[in-house]
Structures are given as C-alpha cells and as structure tokens.
Amino acid sequence: MLAPDRPLLVVALAEEAAHLDGSLPILITGMGKVNAASVLAATLARGPLPSVVVNLGTAGALRPGLTGTYEVSRVIQHDLDTDLLRELTGLTVGASLTLGGDGPVLATGDQFVAEATARARLAARADLVDMEGYAVASTARMFGVPVRLVKQVSDDAGDGAARTWRESVDDCARALAEWVRTRL
Image (cartoon, rainbow, N blue to C red; front, side, top):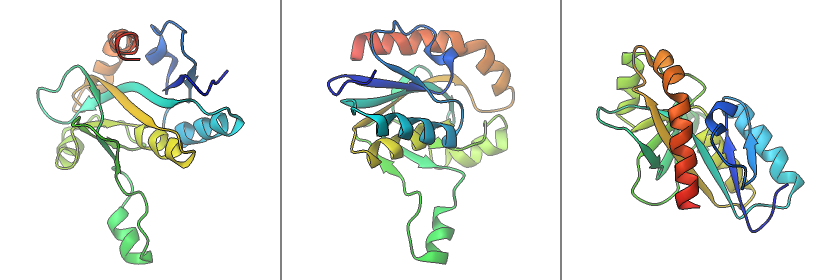
C-alpha cells in the first residue's frame, strides 16, 4: 500500500529486488519503457502518492572504469529521435530530464545494449544505459512526485553483456538493497 510520507521503490525485475527487506513498498514493473510507464502510472493513479519514487535497477556502463552504484543526474531516451521529431512537428518530444546532482547521465531505451558499436554510439551522449529510467522519471513527474534514479553497474554494455548481467544481477541486487538501507 502506498503512503504519502514514504518512498516507493520501483524495479523492473524481481531479481533486482531480491535483497530488499520489504520495509518500503516495492513495485515491480517488468522490463522496458512501456511496462515501466504503464504500471507506475496505474499505481500512482490509485494513490495516495508516495513522497518520492526511487527507481532501482541495473545498468550497463558506456565508459571504461564505471563500476558501483550511481544516482543519475540526467536521463535521455536513446531510441527516440527527438531532433527529427522537433524538425517535423515543431514540438519537443522526449527531451532530456534533469534530476539534479552531479551523477552520471543515463540513456534509456527498449534495447538491451550488448554490442560494442551501439555502446560507442551511446557513450557520446551518456555514461550508463538501462531500459526503464526515463519512463519512470517522466511518469513520476507527470504525477508531480519527486523521482530518483539509482543504478548499479552490471555489465559494460558491450559484447557479452547479457552473460555478464545474468552473472552479476544478484550482486547488483545486494548493492541496491544496501543503498536503500543507508540512503533512505
């Protein structure tokens, strides 16, 4: 049950929530932007609104040396051509969202990045990549709820990332649970 004075933890997969202690409400949305946005919107619409939405999850590192847990400062959609849509319609669709702080930039898209060329292309615009962050941030903002995106690096978003993610997801879940215990 949501409570207006408590955070709502939002994760895509049960594996990412495996080590959360249940002291805060947990919403599992399923993978991808559509699932994240629709499940979170339905939950927030039922109310009451939480004090903050905290999206916890794994992310691929787009730059060498990025490991550990990060709170995202800005999030973009990497699979939406915002510039072309603005040129065609005069409207800005899918603009980047600034969350504050000095953390990394997160690129969100409905593609699991596991190939070196895609990784290099995204690294020109972002530091980390996931599949839900932008949708969670955008939906929370539509409801006027503050949002935080917290990502644990699970892989290098390059060749072999899917194997690495499977091998690291449990350790990532432990690190995210520790972040919740010490930061919320």
